[in-house]
Each structure stands twice: as structure tokens, then as C-alpha cells.
Image (cartoon, rainbow, N blue to C red; front, side):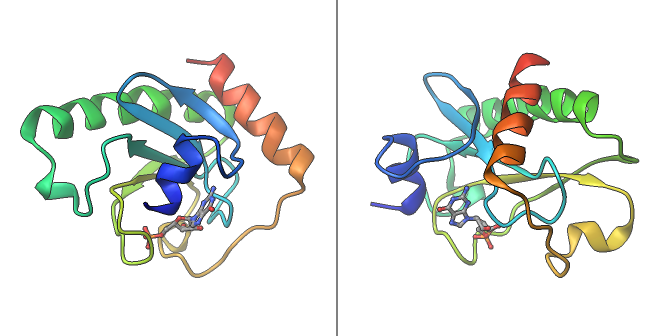
Length: 128
Ligand code: 5GP
């Protein structure tokens, strides 16, 4: 079972942004930028392009809704999207508020207090 399945099941806590029957969105615990969010299909599949086409399309559509909400909360140039998965073998879309190119590069990280994570997750979920 992946760490993200444990998060979805509530066995590991997370700062939840949104959930429906197919997807779970929550704040990345080691964010590139404030508002960095992960969108995960509940179905545990390792690689993005191994998802069935319908789930893939719905994941993109769900991620779009979340990105639009993040952009309403975090002042930024735009929301960047990245799919890597070299760390956690369970599909996840990174949605990252960008000010500059390096914000998408997983080099510089920001440290947030639990109260900031909580406030961000709440603010984004309220814009959905
Ligand atoms: P990737 O697999 O795309 O290379 O990176 C996995 C991402 O998941 C990283 O950005 C990392 O910070 C995030 N991550 C890993 N474990 C946890 C966790 O337990 N909780 C949360 N919220 N994020 C996690």
C-alpha cells in the first residue's frame, strides 16, 4: 500500500483540499511554494500514462478545478503542473504556484507552520 493510499484512508494525516469518489487533493508536506498541492487518484496506479484513459482525463479535469482555486488564493504568475513520481509510486499531479522557473524545479523548498498549512488548505477548499 502506498503512502498516498494511507493518506486517502486517513491512516496518515494530511491537509486536505478536496475529495470526491475518485480523487484526493492535499497539500504537499515539503512544498516548492506556498499552495503546492498534490492530486491523487484513489485507484493506486504507479505511472500516469498507465491510468485508463477515462481516469486520466478526469484526473486532469479535477486538477484543473483545484488549480483555479489555488490561483484565487496564492498570488502568482500561474499554476505550474508537473508529474514525476520517482519518490512515491502512486500517480500524483503536482500543482505549484509559480513566480519564476525555479519554483517548478524541486530545488528550493519553503517551510510552513502547521497553522499555515491548515489555513491554506481551508482557503483553497473554500474557493472550489
Ligand atoms: P515525486 O514522487 O513526485 O517525486 O514526489 C513525491 C512528493 O510527495 C514530494 O513532493 C513529497 O514532498 C510529497 N510527499 C511525500 N510523502 C508525503 C506525505 O506523507 N505527505 C504529504 N503531504 N506529501 C508527501
